[in-house]
Image (cartoon, rainbow over all chains, first blue to last red; front, side, top):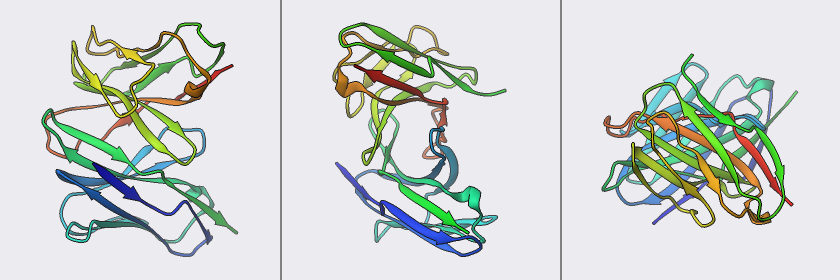
Length: 112
Length: 115
């Protein structure tokens, strides 16, 4: 089985930095994804980590520690358009291929 | 433009009236999947397909059927919809083969209400 935990909601101020944590327990771990989803829209890919460490991509960075079952998404210089839900998803290697299991998502509200 | 197209985007129906939500992708992806999204529960997988004529149950398959007769299409069928199937549905696809780096491309979503 698998268990993915992330905070339900967070609020931050425009221009600030926010860190969204995700912890997981799973077998057959084969990487971790972060997706962004604006209200009523489809999720869009942000990042993928399979090795320990930090991956930086512009204002967004994602960190993974496989031994701790822990990841975070770091958003810098927050903008109002960053208000969205952020989905942590664990990739599991199954007999037939890869399976993506999503957490419930963290709603981020950016205030001015 | 590479995309996943779902139809209808919005639908209100009544209990027991069979309906089909279509999904089509133009990226020649092998893998396709259906998810439902409910508040507080995240995206849950209903059915997936590894390739033509290869389908299997996800985590919440009850009340749904799928078929994969062609590579590009993966319709979701609700034979006898019930109110607990009121949800936001997403179809997604990706290539298979590259270990782990299978970025899903999602359709725009279909909001279904069953009265």
